[in-house]
Image (cartoon, rainbow, N blue to C red; front, top):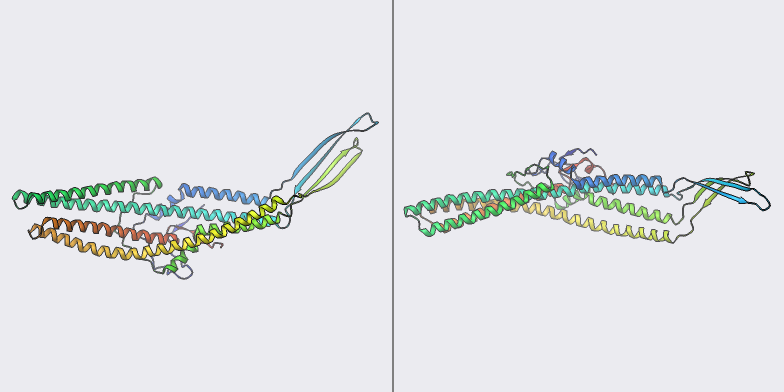
Length: 418
């Protein structure tokens, strides 16, 4: 299946301005993502099941009845006649779908294809969600490791300053111990961050081995225009999971109708030719066979109706869950951007305070403990701000992904049945 990948910025029911959103700049290259998703085993499995659905559709079109050849042979003993009559008959038989069953079978096969096609899209979308989560998990781990390393380097400089002053007699031994403790704590946090980084990168490589290494970028979150209602509508517009359930529901309703029609069984018509009585009798005839029992057919019709009722409830539950997810996506994106702005400003202020505190210590105007505390608080604030920035970008990317604004295929934007 050929897929052309492009950044999608289309109107959804006229509610979302096409130029009012920009994908986060720290996402992986779209060409790479396209190839990775195409090659993922979950997507390939769904595509294989699409081929299965195509075969099932063809089988339904052909129908359950085939032409049958029936041949019989017999030997007749006739009283008073010495010779025996070798006799035989041959015939062909075939069942026929009546009462509109063939048309219903064709419709059921088409709905099965629709469901399988939507499941391919859903498999791709869920795989993209997984990729997005692992990608930003790696970015968070890489960013924290970098910040922890920078903090440890700063505290190493502070420790060197304290050691120099201690040798000159300007700093007490206790201050050197305080600097050593702060540096050891920073190195420990750096090592812990490195462990999380290795785990995050390993998870990303294991799930998507052909994806290039994650590289952090200073990409500022940009909240897309629109409201929660706008983005909810955009999310549900082409949601493959919901469309697959709807196709399954339509197919189940058709199957229930088909089972109801089966209460009128298919007749089997036959033509036969017989050669009897030493070849003196030539018989040409027609046969009709009609099943009589209807108990199993009635039970099957009831089963199909129950299946349709269950899928109707599943559709309602799926729609509600997706609506809730869309609202949560929007809230995370909108609050995430504001949270990042506040933490960014706080981190900048605390970093300035830490720099001043270090200078004040060097001038003898502040105890070392207060300077180290200011530095530690600034480091934690910077980590929190960077994590909030990545959280906001991930939430925005998730919002765009679920509404098919990024990593979308042409098939996502074609009209869907509903």
